[in-house]
Length: 86
Image (cartoon, rainbow, N blue to C red; front, side):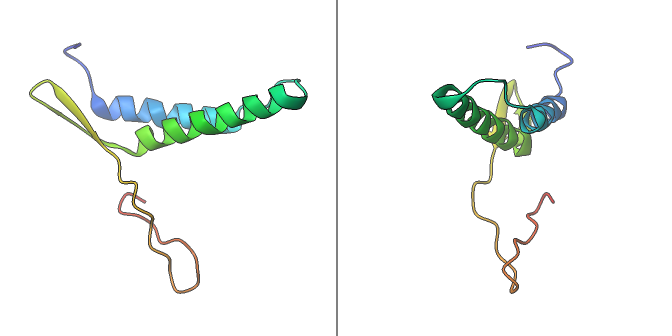
């Protein structure tokens, strides 16, 4: 492990990757290939976004990522309430 490793910087990189996937356009492909590309982009975004939302703790050389997958509570008006990190 590099001595200057910063878990917060790593999490920022995952957030940036998720946003890059979200903004990425579809290539000029048709039919089933287009659908496969779109599905892969959705999976990439979900993976990067979840890692970007993780809480990273580096302790004694062990990096632990905690990802809260619980659904956010809904407000009385049906809107999602912000989570603890919003």
